[in-house]
Image (cartoon, rainbow, N blue to C red; front, side, top):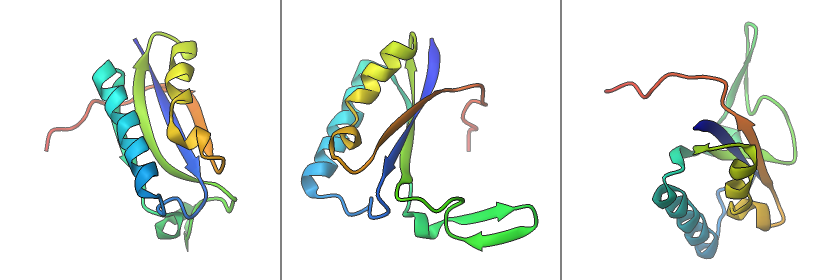
Length: 115
């Protein structure tokens, strides 16, 4: 089965979710886990905590300045892109009117490293 990354975009205030939005996000994550599609998922701290590197230059802030930032991501398994898009459509951020998601096939990686 192929793996797909779902990048979740939101406004820079992405951490300011209402309790209802937090509950919707948790229900969506639970659905992906229960369906067996979820491989991993992470929420990211706000973009103002980012540090970017370009060659030898280190700057505070995200790599690009935009009206939307990557708020989090998950990796899912799906038989094909259409199935991955169906799962991504149910991501709450798609329906909040302030962000959305991007779906990309995973080209490769390494399994989790035991700690």
